[in-house]
Length: 235
Image 1 (cartoon, rainbow, N blue to C red):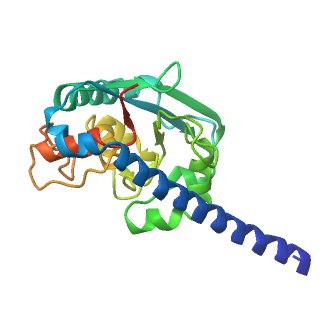
Image 2: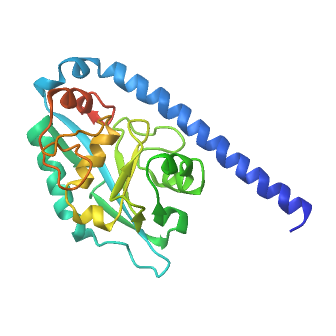
């Protein structure tokens, strides 16, 4: 590679990081504004009234062999479980952002998007190729929000290393889930709740318990947090 090629490669890396920082700043602002606008639910969300709505878009990635990592039908139980918990515990109706909940990207995804990490490694990936790929395919965003419904996008990847799913919390609009997370049924709902600002619970009966042996109970303050999230709307 010549000098000019090296310069272009370095410039691309810098530009990716600049875009990632810009995405983070925008999301921080949007998240803060969202909580301010949701102040009533933040204070009295435990009343779980009136009904609200949360839009979900699920994107199944395709591997190098042009095979989707799961089928659409594999997600039926996870979607049904999330709908039930949101309705029964939070009085929130789960709706598809588009005509259907699930779409499959037929073009093979890059390796760094198919195998992802969680926790600190996931934050690092947010500033690399994986973060850019997910940002390009997140529903309701095009660099900035283009929808006032603020959907959550669930990317079904080949592997979330040492986990079944991952969400970086209320500053992100997407989560990742691998086939084992899809199979566990409750993991999709668990990660949706993370995206709405909920953290882990030590109670095994709680939906925020750290592994798939969790139950579906919630505490009063969890209702406040989820219902006051910008992802949970009255329209």
